Length: 481
Image 1 (tube, rainbow, N blue to C red):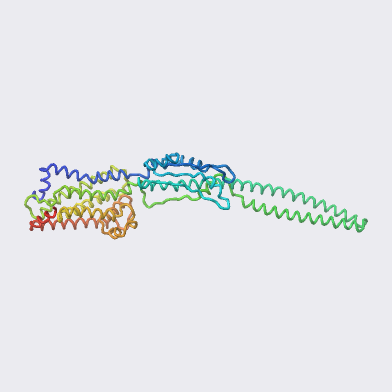
Image 2: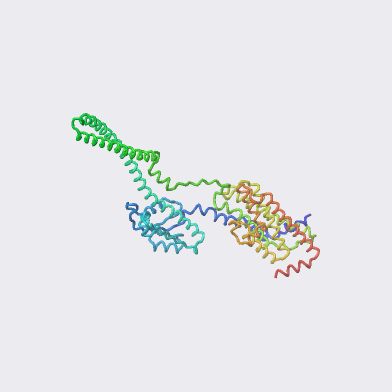
């Protein structure tokens, strides 16, 4: 039985190799700590990202009122703590951008207010903001900074709209008040007209009594008075119609308010309510499945570079030879994955919905990686190690670890279903965020476990063949040089 674990015994007599394996075992932990730590929450720290703002606006009039849109925008940006704003001259801003001290330069041109004031002209002019970034210094930084333009445009548009709506609403309030005053005056006129009509009626009665004595001239006076009465009646009817129309307009405006809060509501009428299927606290949490699966495979590659996988210790059968090596593979795989699980569960601030399944996924993938890489190494020596690295590179592009696979090249989309890391990443995402993807957790575990079993069996087969045909081992060693 003891001969079955000769590799473990050999470690006690080769202290340097033992220490090396401990170091290799911790590679996934170190690798993940560095990468996940550095990418933990970049979007939550954009307030440290400096944005230069150059305000050249000369001011002007908007809707008949003096204004300076550039100054208004600067005041709003000073209240915005999402970025680190600096308000400087153009030459200073350009220098900071070139040296990487700032990640974008936004220039408010001198004609900003002038163009804002042309919105009701026959030929309105738009405001042209000038934005510069430096992708060569930091592409990601410039991409994030580029989003600042949207915020600045929104603030600028809001400022212009507010000015126009504020004046328009003041006019509406004055117009409504004027309608009410006119309606009141028309009512008073109608009352006066009624009195005139009544008085003229009395005059008519008197004239009709005098007409027989006055003859033809009396009849003419009666007719003239009647015409006056008819005119007064027509005037009153028209006056009443006008008052009815104005009163109708007043009734339509009832319940309508043109105040400051109404301006703000119209200026921003839409509020989005997000209802996400899963909750991601930060960028590091979303990126973790990719880094964790990658780090465990890197650990297996490093192990193959350090440990003599192909060396036979003692005189044993192929199965015992394999079992002796297998014990080392399992120790490394378990040590690496469990150390990584402890780091994620208790070191990183990652909320993991299913800690048990999460740990199982890391352990199973680590075992699979320690079966794949040693097999390639046993069969092809250094060429096998090279192929293990090639396999890693292919998985980097085809496992959908960062961007959706639909955004990758066609070759990587075709490789995606055949990439072991694809299923590891899917499983880890399900474990962390508690949902079911296009491939269920059980299916992913079967695939990863199947890969581990297949490559373990193939490695066993190679060891058995090598033990029976030692010259094959010598040929493989010659291929290493």
